[in-house]
Image (cartoon, rainbow, N blue to C red; front, side):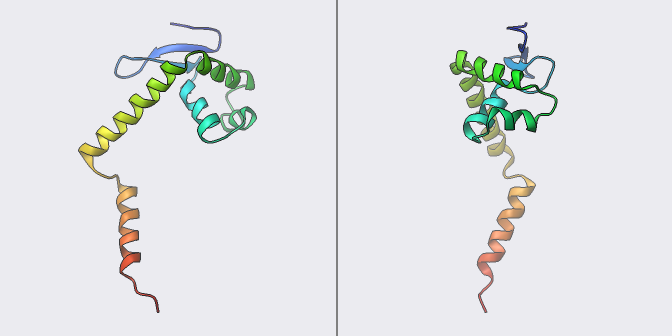
Amino acid sequence: MTSNAYIELRDNRAGKPRAYLSGTRVRVQDIYIDAEIHGMSPDEIAAGYPHLSLAQVYAALAYYFDHREQIQGEIREDRDLVEEVKSRTGPGPLERKLKGTEAQRDTVSPR
């Protein structure tokens, strides 16, 4: 189901529609997060995704502002899923390794 020339809605693995840049795996929420959370400019975002045009980046941002509640809901659902998986499986290998490193630092006394 296509919304416009740059954005298409596709079902995710759970069957829920998500907004993507047409013909890519890049979600509108990914572009929004880069811009608003990471503070990247549209030019920086386009440079980070060499297969995207600057027009596509701006289209994603425009779509976000026209569909803010929808995209924020998608972000919340993704965050909730991550938290659910973490609660079932515990910390991942990198987190365990970092915690182990921190524990080792705590036990080492200064010279």
